[in-house]
Image (cartoon, rainbow, N blue to C red):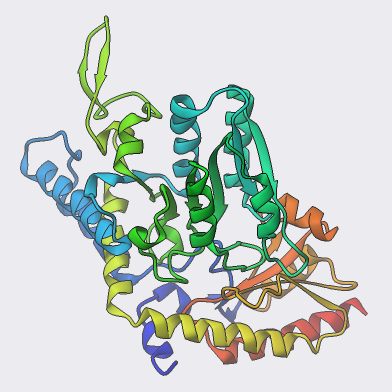
Length: 405
């Protein structure tokens, strides 16, 4: 993509050196780098709009509230939600899923009801449902995947029953890169009368999201996966479901009236936004949305996919390498092991050469168990990555391989 160098100029962190080496950042599936516009907006808001959002009637408070709610409008437009009050701000995808697991669970789940997740889920889309099942006496079922990393939809069909209340799946696996057929999964669940939550953390910048077309009931994602600040997440939920669900937390802002006899709760979205939010980060998040809207997302996705194919062709020449997640329909990340090279040791050594990659169990123990490995290495791409960086990474891996031999 000819605009890669131009795009890199928007990200000041990419120009730094680590251990005296130019940074090559291949850990985008964990968190993307921050835009200069996000950094500038955050700094400006701390100075110019440091007033408590929704509460303070003075000028600074009004400006903070205006900026905060402006981001809600931008998120609604970005994912094509029907109503702005269907957008709930959280601390991240994890909290958004936990919110649904608790509030939806308290409202809709009874003993013997069934929840379905997939074998390729991040822990954040497994553990909250296990906790809810333990609390409510519900049953957790799991959609398996094949060795290429494709969900077995025939198995999914057999798991769906009249007792299925909710299906929670990732749109894109953070380990395998598999792009799941979420529209088909949602349609099948809805036919059984079940609701669907989509973990969109990896998908939010790797495919175009239109909530109306997807027709999921809940969708969760994080700002830091899309060049924005950490500590900000979004939960989209359909209005009728959110209206019926009990609040996740109690405190300020989420109430209508409080007496010692009883408390009545506020309207959406404030019912699920207890306490003072990180309003400065939420407001600066709008600049990340502006950036994504300003670029050709289809061209960026195409560039990332070319990087992925190039990396696969390059790295497969390394003796003993094994790739995990080889679906024909996958996003721009590559997980692998190399025989005789421990992932943690390799990542530690390659860090000294300026490369930032992910290693470990990727918060996905069931995937590691599926392949019978203790850990993996992962590289993941963004529009600001280049083919030259992949060449450099390949050479660095060969150098480290010599050290292990």
